[in-house]
Amino acid sequence: MPTGGPAGGLVLRQTIREQRRRVIAASLLGMTHQGCEALVPVVIGAIIDSAVATGSSSALLRLLMVLAVLFLVLSTCYRTSARITEGTGEIASHRLRLRLGARVLDPRGGADADRLPGALTSIATNDARRVGSVVTVIPYGVAALAALVISAVALLRISVPLGLLVLLGIPPLLWLGHRISRPLERRSETEQERAAHASGVAADLVSGLRVLKGMGAESAAVARYRTTSRDSLSAALRAARSRAGHEGAVLALTGVFIALIAIVGAYLAVDGSISVGDLVAAVGLAQFLLGPFQLLTYVNAELAQGRASARRIAEVLDSPAAVAEGHDVPADDTPGHLALRGVSLGTLRGVDLDLPPGSLTGVVTRDPALADDLLVCLAREADPEAGAVVLDGTPLTSLDPDGLRRAVLVARHDADLFESTLLDNVRAGAHEDDPAAVERALGASAADEVARLLPEGTGTLLAERGRSLSGGQRQRVALARALAADRPVLVLHDPTTAVDTVTESRIAARLREVRKDRTTLLVTTSPALLAVTDRVVVLEDGVVRVCGPHAELLTTDASYRAAVLA
Image (cartoon, rainbow, N blue to C red):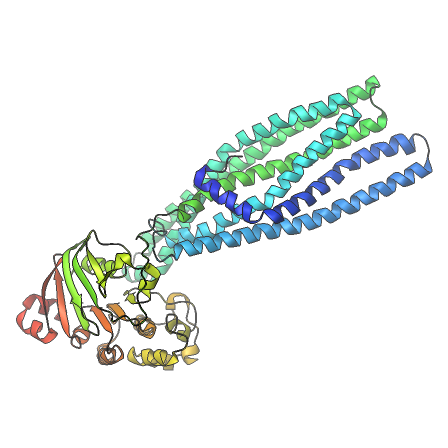
């Protein structure tokens, strides 16, 4: 069975292998169910020949008991098999979601490259569910094949021509069914891609709803989503038409095949080659075969869609890491001496910057791209094209990414809050055994004032991304979270742009105290924050243009004065 390419096939095989015991158990139960169901018309034919035609009450009673046992066994096996298969599919989907989540959250990054968050969500939900459905339908497929084999054997016992007709006719039907499913597989993949893109665009628009309303760009946003949604709808309709055509074609072929079996059986009965009971059994088996063939049609369609989804999951799982995996781990008591030595990346061109342990340094730049590339380097979201970023004498490229983030925290300006309580948001990165750090962080960021305004204080539940708070309140809570983490090195990017000047001055004064003996870098143009730094570094045209104390630069550097006081 083709599995959707090497990567997609690996995902499918691994998913099936993880659930093989449950799949085998469900398959055995399904085979028993289908076998008993196939024997029902055979027993009915035996009742006609052995009991009704002869008038034997004992034979009738005996065969009715056999029929009752068959129904008891097949119904019990069906219920048990269905319960196992559905559970197996859910477990498989759950484990795939965990694998996808682990890959997306991998400190090395790379899984989100060129993918919107909504698209990743769609892959982790819809595609994982479809691959899980493959595990669900395998026992159904095995049971359907078993039913065909048992029916063929039963027909062979009734009549060799009938049995051979089934045995020789099944393989071509299965091959045709697989060939017919190819367009469905292609269109299902396109459908999932368009649906994921539409989800990503929707999530992107919702997250920026306030900005769009402020700009009066709602109509442009609606038009963008309408186009994306229409593309998704068109792909879904094409996939639906393909599935309907696939199922209709297979059922038509199946109907012709079953009609042929019935015609041959009727001819043999008229010819006297088989008895009336055998004819009833043959016609009953022919009608019964419709069920297994319909089941195989369903299984084939699910496999086609599962293969398409498996390829998309494999693309995420096999995404190349954004940075190489280092093996050194910074010590818990690392001094936090951070240095950039001739670093070039994007707009950075040979930047040299030294941040001694315990220093509080400001970085000022008018170019947002320069600030972003600096943050990317320090957070090790990408490695420099040239030069090196060094922590306590060790290049960041040699450090384990997860260990690095326990030593260096880069808190971006657009950090999101979680849909949880204010307190949970603040202590998300803090040590569990240090509640005092959380209290200090709340005070230093003035987030304690935010808590006092909320109905349940720090226990107040925040809306998604903190939208129940104002922009300034969100910034203070995000700053408190960064401070509570108490990393040896902390990089803050414009942490107070939405905060009023009085509160900003209080935060600046408290920030120096709470980060005493810790290395801190402020990427900002806020004069209140820069006033408490030990020195300020000015980045311009990709290099360090000048550095010195804030007060001195205000007096001697007109460009700096314009950038900070504008």
